[in-house]
Every structure is written in C-alpha cells, then in structure tokens.
Length: 293
Length: 293
Image (spheres, rainbow over the protein chains, first blue to last red):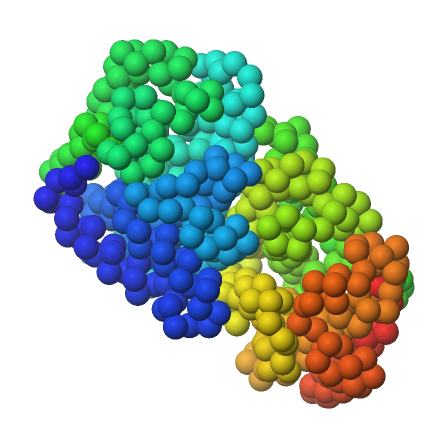
C-alpha cells in the first residue's frame, strides 16, 4: 500500500514520535524493551495515528500533543496484535512480514510486551501537553474504546465465540464495530478533542470515524479472501480456514464491496461543515477504501 | 489471614466498590465479564486498596474517589496475577484457593480478561471525582509503577530472566522493588495525592510505601518456604522448585526475617510528622509484617 504523498509528512512525524516515546533498547530490563520496539517499529500502516493527526488538523492548524496521542493509539493497536497472534488466540507466525512477537521472543515475553505497551499508552496519554481536563477525557474515551463494552476486547471475545458457530449479519456487525471500529472512531474523536473541537463538529467526526472504521474492517475481510499472504504481510485466507465471522462470509464479496463504498460516501457526507478543512479527511477515506493490503 | 478489625470497614467499602465498578455478568459479551468478575471477586487481601484508603485517611478525613482509585489498583493487581499464572509464565493451576483464570475459562479468555482489567483500571481512574490535574498525575504514577522501567512488568521480566541463572542480592532487590514494591508505593502515594497531600508529606509516605512494599514481598518469599499450599491458597514451595530469585534463597530465612523487621521499623519512622493520623498506617505495617498467608 502506498500512502498518498500528502500524508507522508504525518507518517514521518509519527515514526519519529514512536521512536522517541518508547524506552530505548538499553534501558533495563532490555529484553522487554527490545520486544516492545520490535513490534511497534516493524512498520504498519499507522492508520490510527494518521487519522488522529488529520482529525486534529480538521479542527485547528496547531494541535500540540496530537502526534503523541496518535502514538499512544498505535501502542494499543500493537499490543492487540501481539496478543491476538498468540497460540491461544489466532496462532499466527507472521505479522507485517516478520515473525510474530512470540515466535521471536517466546510467549512469556510476548504476553508481557503486550501488557507493557498498553500500560505505556496510558502513561503517555497522561503526559500529553494539553490541559488536564482534555487529557482525562481522552484517556476515558481511549480506555472505553479499547475495553469490553462495545470496545476492542469485547469485539475480540465476540469474535472468538462466533468462530465456533454460524455467523449472522448482526453478530458480524457487532464484532467489526467493536473490534476495529471503536478504536478508529476514538482515534478521530480524540484527535479532535486534543485540538479543542466543539461538540457539533465532534459529532460529525464521530460518525465519519464510525463509518470508515467499519469500512476499514470490511476491506480487511475482502483482502483476506482476495490477496496473497505476501501482499498482506500476514497469513491470507485465515478467516475462511478458521471459519471467522466476516462480511464476505455473510453478505458475499460483491455486496461487501458495495457496503464499503456506501460507508465511505456516508463518512464523507459528515465533512460538509468543515469546508476545505475536511479535504484531507475525505482523501484519507478514499484511500482507505481503495487499499490493496 | 485475619485483617485487624479496624480495617474491616475499608475492606467492605472496597468489596462494594469493586462490585459496582465492574461490568455486570449480563453485559455482553458475557464471557469476558464473567472472567473479569471471577478473578477480581475471588477474595484476596485487598492490601493495595486498603493502603490507598489509609494513605488518603492520613491526609484528610474526606477523600472522595479514594475507594475507586483503590479498586483500579486492585484491577491492575488482578490482571498481573491472571497473566502471571498463564502456562507460558508461572503455569499455576490454583489462585486464592480456586482454579486460575485459564484453568476455568481457557487461555484465550484469560489473556483477554487480564487485558480488559488493565484497560478498565485506566477508564475508572480517568473518571475519579477529583480535579482533572490530580487525575492525570495519578494516572501517570500508576502507569509508571505498572510499567517496565522500575515497574511491575519490568520486575516480572527480570524475574523470568533470573529464574534461569544464579540469583544475587542486587538482582533480587531490583526484582522485588519493581515487581511488587512499585505498585504498593504507588498505592500509598496516589491515595495521598487523591486526598490532596502536600509534597513534604508525600515524600514521607513514599518512603513508608517503599519500605513496606519490599517487606511485603520478602514475607511472601518466606511464606512460600514455610507454609502449606492450603494456608496460602496457591501453590507453596514453587519458588524453590522453579529456582526463583528470592530473599531466603540469597540471604537465608533468618536474615530475611530480620530485614523485614528493619523495613517495617523504617517505614513507621516516616510517620512521625503525621501524629495520631499516622496510627492506622503504623498498625497496617505491623499487620503486614506478621501475616501468615
């Protein structure tokens, strides 16, 4: 996937901040910091931090802390991937084209590296250079989105449960909205809160985030069916072999593609009030809808 | 272990708040909320929340949020036990006299229940009914104490590494201060911050917390050698069979007992400025030093 050039500066800003916000490999105990850095700095699309920066940019030209906030979201995303890949969960050997954390460092360190990234995320959020009341609001929203009640861990559990039985449309919708959608919505919302958004604009951005969050996960499902493992940098075709609850499994590929297009269109409709300030979020939505890995 | 009667009210307050701050078993997805409630509500000594309440009480008669803060610390403590008990780590079948989380719910749910409790802790901290700047300070301190740099996860990793080789005094000291000490110190400090402590008193309480934190873990080591599994509610004698880095292994039982007594004495010396307000913390230290499970 090639990120459009206009987002390249965001990506560089984030890579730089990730490097800076992680403990160095020399900090003892070195083993855990090596593992944390390995998974975070392995690449990845940085979708959540970029959404966070761009949502902040839709509100204000100057949003201190938005990059650090984006990094905290990326730490949480990375922790979820490390734990998801464990033998007891998805049992995956490859991620972002590299051995998964437990393959490289062993299960014990992989479990603790995930724990440590989740913990570090909240430490960095508490240190954001913005007024304290915004920080606590952001922490509350992020923790809720990463949690069990309509949040990421809740979605993972529902996903585990659904793998056993026959998937239906409502279950798949819940899983996707919770497992992936909640944190993407939170990335957009908290970026905007960080930049001082008023409630009316925040509402529009929430719906933008909700729609592209769901679209993003449906595209993931579609790519799992259509792409090779090499193109994805992770094992392709796993959803079907593990009988995962996915949009293509429930609605078919063609209908899933249509739903994605509808979601992206509806996301962009929310940007009307932002005028030219909404342009980059519109481009980001279009890019996410057209990605191939 | 029988908690002295004067702390019974603390314990009841905490049990009540834990119940209230956890999602109900009916909240979907039910599987994860059942697992979270199972481990948190299985009993336990509630040392961290009680220390937190009593540190708050040493500062002020009225400290809103101290019980909720204590519960968040207990969620973090419980998550660390669930993950520590996993097959890839300590591989324990029994905890607090009951099957461990992975024995009861399977490894996948146990990993996610730990993740969820850590996440919920920060959500509840962000919601504490105190001014936002105190909340962010508390969140930062708790996250740091639970993290990798001189914190709980760092201590766990150092512990894993030490199990392989020969333990030495400096390594054991680091492990204990990080793995157990940091969160106990944080319980005392954040309780005091929640109640509005000034810096001078906070310094005294930090050293009190540091000393009893280390004493607490040394006593744990001693009890592992001396007690039966039945009395402990978890597998006894595991430290030796797993060649863990412990104080008795490095210093011998008798010297370890002396060190505990010294640490408790030094902890209590820090309470001089508190007058009668320090009395309960003094009693708590004496109780922790004399516990038998």
